[in-house]
Amino acid sequence: MTAYWLARAKINDYDEYMKYATKVPDILKKFDGKVLTRGGNHKTLEGRDYFERFVVIEFPSLADAEACFNSPEYKAAAAFRRQNNVGDNELTIVEADDLTPTD
Image 1 (cartoon, one colour):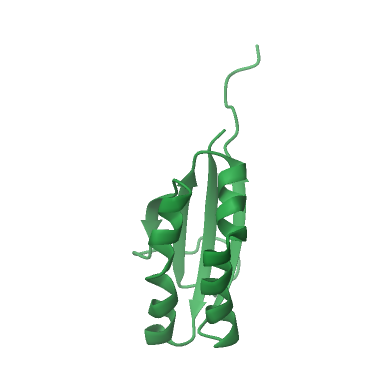
Image 2 (image 1 turned 90 degrees about the vertical axis):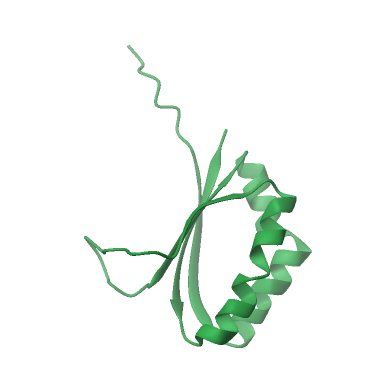
């Protein structure tokens, strides 16, 4: 079943954050990840208005989404972001729900 990375980021150092962000697309391809939206205009309708970058990435399955996150390549990219405090990220993986009526 399809799964999604839902990522939110507060960018502390744009130039350094982009060094992280430019590494991610090649990593995603290895796990059949497809970026559905990245950045762009947004409006927080409820909750804390803290994050400024939003990303949604589709994967064929929850296992693929987790494997990507746990891959050595992504771990190295994320470690760069964390160690240099270039962005405060939050990432949640959500598996698509079967919305078939249950009558």
